[in-house]
Every structure is written in C-alpha cells, then in structure tokens.
Length: 237
Image 1 (cartoon, rainbow, N blue to C red):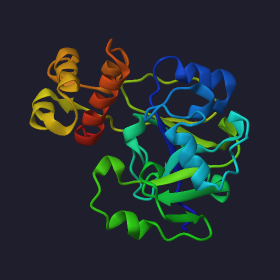
Image 2 (cartoon, rainbow, N blue to C red):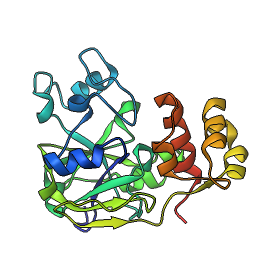
Image 3 (cartoon, rainbow, N blue to C red):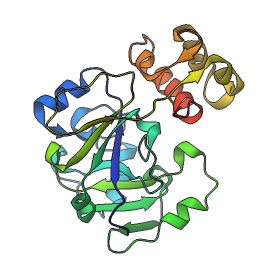
Image 4 (cartoon, rainbow, N blue to C red):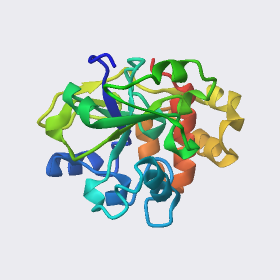
C-alpha cells in the first residue's frame, strides 16, 4: 500500500460531538457511544456484533467496548470530504503510522465481504474501482485497532458551514456539501418521501447544507436519509 494514503473517520460533528472530542481527546466507536451514522446494532446479538465477530474470528467478543476497532475508510481516491462521506460531513484524517494497526475489507462489512487486507498485504483498490456499487457504498472499509486519540490525527476536516474548534491538531475545511431543492426532487426516489419532505422544509434559499441537517427536528432515520441525498448528490462545490 502506498504510504501516502490515509485512513479517514467520517462523522457528523453536531450535537456536542466536537466539544466531547476536544474534552476527551478520544474518538469512540458505536460500541461505546450507542450512536451511529449507520445501523444501531452494536450489542450482543445485533448485526454489527455478529459482523465483527465473523470479521475477527471472535477476537473482540469479550472485549471492553473501548478496545474494539474504530471504523472508517481508506481514502484511496484522495477525496477532500473523506473516504466514506455517507457517515458524515466531517472527518478525522489519521496519520501514516495508523496504517500499520489497521485492517481493511471491501465492500463494507455489512455486505459480508470475502476480500481483506493490511497495509503490508493489500489488493483492494482495483476491486473497489472496478465495482459498480452506488457511490455511497463504494469505499474500502478500515478497522483501526487500538485507541484513536487526537495524537493519531493529522487533521480534523470540517464542512465550511461549521465553525473552527479549538483542538490540539490542525483543523481544515473542505469545499462543502450543497444540494439544491431542484436536485433533491430530481433524485427524490433515492431514499424516502419523508427525507425529501424534510429537505424541502429546512432548505434555506433553495439550498440544503449540513448545518441545516444538524439543526433539523425530525426522526433520526429521516435525517440520516436526507444526509444520504446530500452526500450523494450535493457534491463539494
């Protein structure tokens, strides 16, 4: 694997997440927080638990939640908004040395993959780049083993609709996600009628941006689906 590639951990920065990151200096997994930008099944008998048990041969079945892997993506395409934007508008770009304690698979573990790799035994890029999977699913999943602290972070990268935060690591901004209501309606069948209705309701001057989603008062699943619209079709300007 080229050593200039980076693992990124995409997440939504609202709801006090950044303040907690600054206070604790730790990035926590779904097993610790009980929250997720994907499915909420990180518990015994849940789908995430079962996937992880299969992935790692039961190695983490009895581990403390803090000791479980942190999930992200290998940003092999050098996307400014991170390797897996379906999970949030912000991301942590991790330092080179983190590659050496990371395992990889393609596709996402939800799809029960059979192709795996490490930084020293890796052949997943061609597999991802020749797949016709939807853009939000077409990423190489990364599993960082061990804690992720701010000492492991090369930079926090935010959407420009979010203000800077005081962290002991560089803070950058990508060009931003923006989705017009016309484009939302053009791709209305991508998720649900409820997510389209929410987008039309919260748009400002006919445009939806990540900060508006963070402030939206709606069921989490509807907000998540609207984010999928924005992440898929509101390409960084």
